[in-house]
Image (tube, rainbow, N blue to C red; front, side):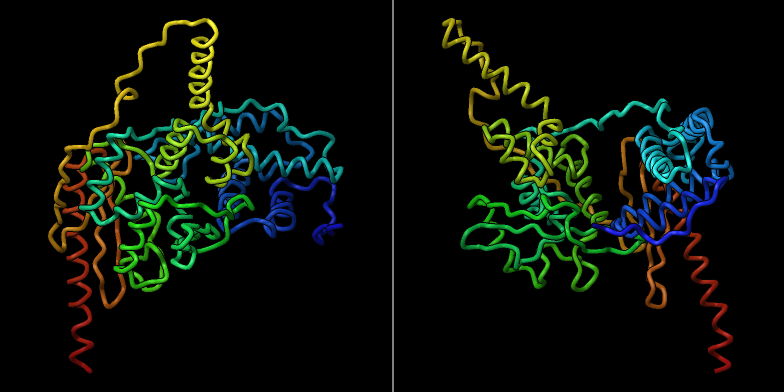
Length: 420
């Protein structure tokens, strides 16, 4: 039987701030992964404690908590309010509630509370983020453009396996058996407090083996001859390190734009794989194992819209077989084999050295970045704007200011050099 962490016995009248700190540091933190720790700490120390921390635990009411959630929705955002607005998203508020509710549940177990005051709070609706998938024609265009932009093997493997972004970037060549086509997934890469960290998957289901199709295996066999690293997709700027997930996200957006595809997330490539697999007859249990879901129920819930369409198709077939009904006309896209795309890849438009880079983050936000290396250290700064043109203007101004700072710093050091 597991022993409870050694904690000081809470006293009657303890403040919520003290209880949250006690609960998090003693009960939760030891069992959390670094990324999850950061999420808990943001919720507790940046949101809950500043707003409710001075309430006596046994005096905290449902009305107090409900008012806190309402305020979070109106003006709870702490950073980049000029870009995203004053309020927090529904998902973030629900996450804060989950943490607070769990801490108060423990207080009930410890007999510090008679009941959990967060039980009856009304929460923002749990709206799932809209799923987007590429059409077969868009997949062709994406891969044609990816060859031009130097990320063909990465995107091809993603579309053939549906791996999570952190999983595919953490692959090493030893994970792939070229004879059998078996690819082991046993680690992930993610960012913790600004540093890239490689760790095991979050769940046992994340540790799995995927069999690669022969054409994909042949592509990787040729690609391996060009890579001088143990990492399958190594960082272009750091020795013996995987690619940065943020860099991959930005590169995907560039490829999508040049390939004239709809704008989507890297995770939507995973959805594209899963959707295509189901439409081609793969069963839910097999798909669940391949993509690393904890249970088939998760997969079924995630792709319910696809399975609904599959069930309708099955019903139509039964109807035709029993009732001898006339078959429904097939969609043109389903009635003929997809013709090879005539899309021509756009040649990359490389920026001149010293002009920074501009990338689109979402439909209404652009990011400009300038990162010169000064005395062996990279000095990076960003600007943000709602249009590409505005971002280019802000970036040009940022570069001018940074160059003036650098020149002034060099001038300031000159007397010291002369004196030496």
